Amino acid sequence: MRWWMPFAVIGAVIVVAVGVVAVLFAMREEPEARSVDDALEDFRSEDEDSGATADAAATPAPGVYELAGEGREAISFPPVEQADGATMPMTVSAADESDCYSVRIDYNEAHWQDWNLCRDGDRIMEHGGHTYQQWDLGAAQVENLSTFVCDPPILFLDFDKDAGHAEQRSCAGTNDAVEGTTITSGIDTHVGRVTLTVGDEELEAIHITQDHEISGAQSGTNRNEYWFRASDGLPLRGIRSSNIDSDSPVGTVTYTEDGTWDLVSTTPQT
Image 1 (spheres, rainbow, N blue to C red):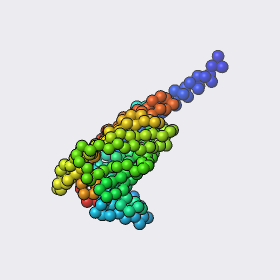
Image 2: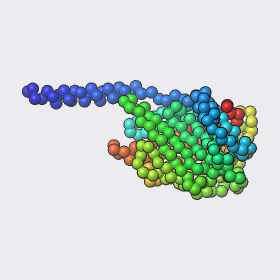
Image 3: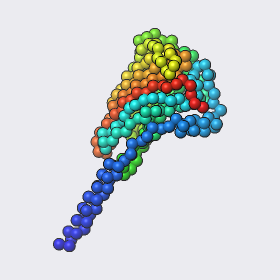
Image 4: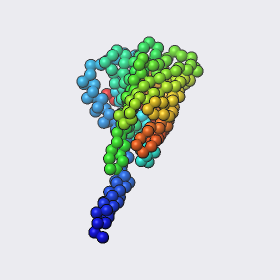
């Protein structure tokens, strides 16, 4: 009967290992909100190293803005969810090219997104952007950086379009955690101009919607609504919703995301 012992020991080790992983998974922590102070420290450090400038009248003022929001992201396997922060820093940074800048929103400590934008007359063109996420699975942490390039640049916002104008757009991207190229394409609609209240200010805003299909290495849908200040394109409000499938060794993994945010003040910290 002794020859059964190694298998029994191995079985016990596996059971213990699974138990440890289960405990670690149960004890994992959700990311906290990223503080405006942390984002401001990064902005000041990067600003010192950059001589970039942009036309103050044509683009949003550089600095860190405060957003108030809520939202959640989830993956289907392993089943993990994490919440957005109630406060989200939004960092506007000038780029090296004239009238170009980036906008980054930190949804929480483990999830941020940025857009690379350039003002061109009455239009703002998008050149691409990134999304970063990190997931705590207890026994390990998984992270992914997606990089999208719009070549040629696509129309992001038009200050002179009539209400109801629709524009076809498409960008290609890659993910660290997913092989192949992902395409996002669809229709952006210039809904029209409205008045939004931010703090104690009433601002004229341009409202747009984005209805996109995801294809290629991933598949799904992405719908966004944005409101931008009509003078310079400063983001004032956003609503986002995504449902994206990715292949994996354990089958299809579905990612879902929903959230909203609103600008607290049009005056940035610098």
